[in-house]
Length: 79
Image 1 (cartoon, rainbow, N blue to C red):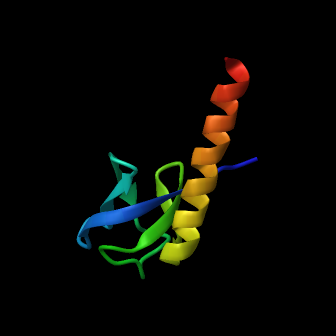
Image 2: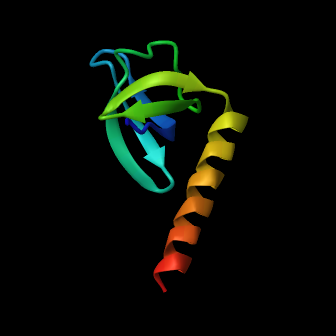
């Protein structure tokens, strides 16, 4: 199973086809080769360093909230 993580594009370099993407405060350089339509401020789904799909902001935020809830449940069960 593969897992894509939503992140927000904070800067974009069209010449090298990469972007800086913010994942809740952690920023990573991501290839935009598969998602050329994304712009600064957009949310993208990232898998193994590649933006694979542009997301609607609402969908990205719902997904991030679900990930947060899952993490909290896991921590609760380990205590």
